[in-house]
Amino acid sequence: MDEVQPFTPEDLSPSTAAILDALTVIYVWFGTTSRPAEKITAMQSAVAFAKDSKVHPKDVELFVTSSGQEPPAFREHFSGRWTPNTGGSFVSAMHPLETVLAEYLRETYSVDVLLSDAVPPHLDMTRLETYLSTEDFEGLFGMRRDDYVALPLWKRDEVKKRVGVF
Image (cartoon, rainbow, N blue to C red):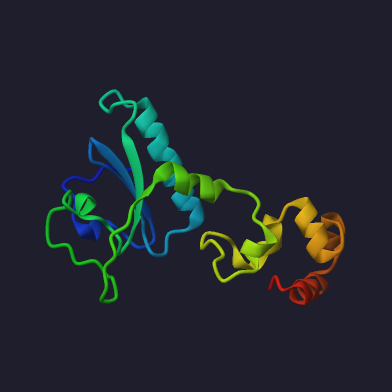
């Protein structure tokens, strides 16, 4: 991790996740193209940083915000003109880090979630079957996961299309 001071909005690269220590609050910021692994690392690093800190209270608040959704309390820590790329609209949003991290670390999802239009954006859309519990997998696919994995790739793709997970 690199410490950057003073900060400007240009320090926030779309392909990264960044941590902002505002003393009373710690923010994790997600760039528009940052990868899920980077986001998880940043969130886990922020938790560890807060836990090991000698200057922060033990109950310091940790929040996640994203590019184009930065709340005023986040933006006030940057010098220079704040001109986020929001496509014309701006919605301020921040979420408790603990909740966001739990969602990113979640291993299984219901069939209903994975077949809906509301699939969590951090999931690999080409591997949705890997997020099913064993029971849901066998119920949807009609076979054991080991048998599915043993199929040639083209056959797995065929099965995924048949059950709607493609």
